[in-house]
Amino acid sequence: QVQLLESGGGSVQAGGSLNLSCVCSGYTSSTSPSRMAWFRQAPGKEREAVAAILTASGSTHYADSLKGRFTIRREKPTKTHVLMQMTMTSLEPEDTAMYYCATGRPRTVVPPMEAGAYTYWGQGTQVTVSS
Image (cartoon, rainbow, N blue to C red; front, side):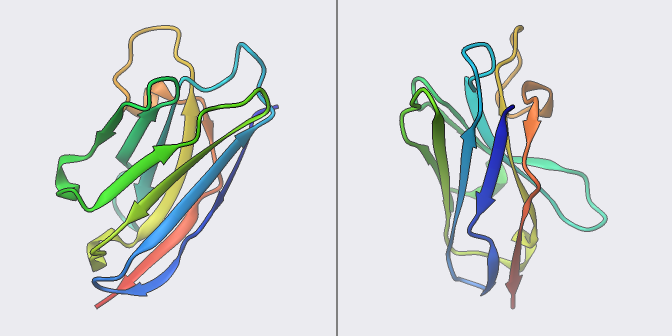
């Protein structure tokens, strides 16, 4: 059974940095993730994609609104697990949200920044940025 374990959230002041981590494990050859991503949802707002990465190539995708402040990366997958991390810098109060790790292996063409590309979701880790 695929499991996602997120860590690294917390509270920081505006301008600070945080590193989020997500370990995906328990997959088989048919459920191993071809892509991983971070989504976030702030209170009263819709969930939005933050960043995504293709696990084989390492190709990355970002929300335009981030203005280069976030960096997503991954270690090359092993047979048992894959680690994805995201460094968030120059954090703003508007970045306050619950951040969710997601993994997927879509059978059809789905853009990496769309939620429909992802099957498995973590429990979320809270990021709070104070002004």
